[in-house]
Image 1: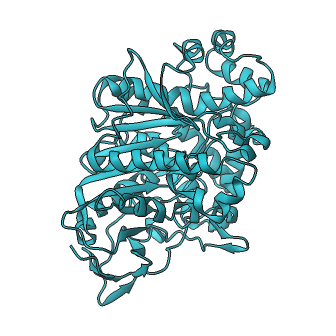
Image 2: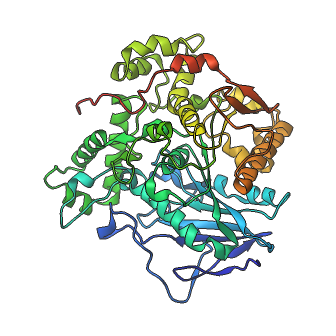
Image 3: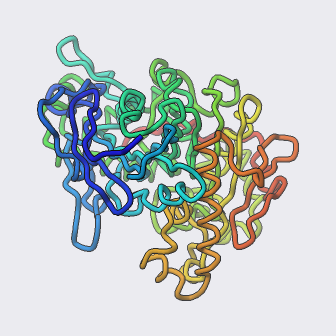
Length: 513
């Protein structure tokens, strides 16, 4: 199939542009703008258009703090409630067969981020896919963030003004439905879609795997540094929503009017207040994220993997060696002894001594930081792998590689660093600067390995043969490093120390102050 810059979608004709040997379409609406009466509502169908719609510029970022929209030094992407768009990147050369599709969901704690971030461009990944095959189609997605996307306001619904739950999650389902309807027109194969994401995007992936309406929308999934246990109970989500309305100056009685009429800036400020108080009150929990509403998201994702009700598609899941170092100076994760003790006091006080015994040198700073990263990302991801491996092919990894500069900074293989390999940053000016102190060749080799496994998985439903499937018998894990290798049950001492702990989303509710 010959790829042209003009494509007819189910909503109308769009015009993209060539970018070297690739073609890109940007800012394509996959749902109606969620503004006015559609604020806090599930995504609605796009209004079809006449003529040819320009698809050469990024759509708006979701409403957020300006720092999350930086595209370059001094350059920021506009943000707006009108943000439900996606982007497609495809090889310009023709292909005899439909191409596999990879749909990327960005991270940012469900409060920051945009698909226009240069890191997420996707060009390196698509070009790498052409070396040994016909190539892939890359899709990136914007979705609602913060209070507009991840606070459950449904308790305030009235017959005149309904509110829906899990808005950002519903946006992602709507985007995947758009892919099913339209990706063939771009040369993609709708029956071979891989959804992948990192951090909040990784959590989106592990959650989508348990959303009934997402069944059949993707054939494979890759979850990088997910925090699967961070979905909120309905009780907790309702409490957060009530506090949020209070920060807006409203009450339960006039909440619907308050939420509908509040200016975007006020919504953001109230969200910041809620985030800060939550981080201090319940270490390790964020107020913005998926909610177990009993309907769109019926049960906890970790529980769904354990009982086999998650969608039984092949899954790659894993974390980085030292996830917590990125957060050592931020009050987000339990990365110091005081916050760790408070965490256990709100969940399982008797478990503190047992779990922390798995961290050599605890309560020193390094051990506490590693605890925080493991609590949030590694341990619940391991539980997902354990549960899913009983029902579908599962591949577990740990990303250990860090160039010397990252080690000198005390970050090592921190949260998000594997994205530099996934998206081929090693050969850019930034990547070369990052390896001035050493490690350039190893960085390129690790990038080649990660991209090769990701592309093979997206193409065939399994990574390269050098990566064996995970099971609870030998727990074979692929370690990406200067010497990438398979290891059985890595960090088994930590794993055993965590056995039996299930406190991720069960922290006791504290009264508001």
